[in-house]
Image (cartoon, rainbow, N blue to C red; front, side, top):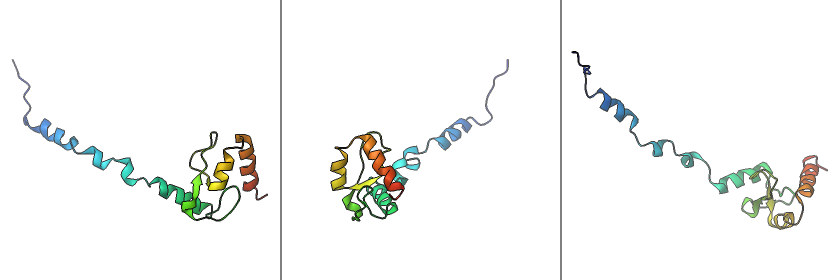
Length: 105
């Protein structure tokens, strides 16, 4: 009768220790992703610190995300006045306004 004995019984332990590292610290997505404030400021800079609707130049901290159902989140920044007005418009009206702005109408 033959027994299957590994020549090095510790080889499994060594292999296990290679994969037993702290994965949370290495693969943490929040460590490399920018903060929401940084994302909003980048979007404002891309729009030249202008409100996407009225075109008024504002400081990046005074521009807010357009949070309206039917629009891709975190794409358009608008001033506080337009943000409150956007809530009273329908989604179709807002899309028309954005399309006209894109064509420099």
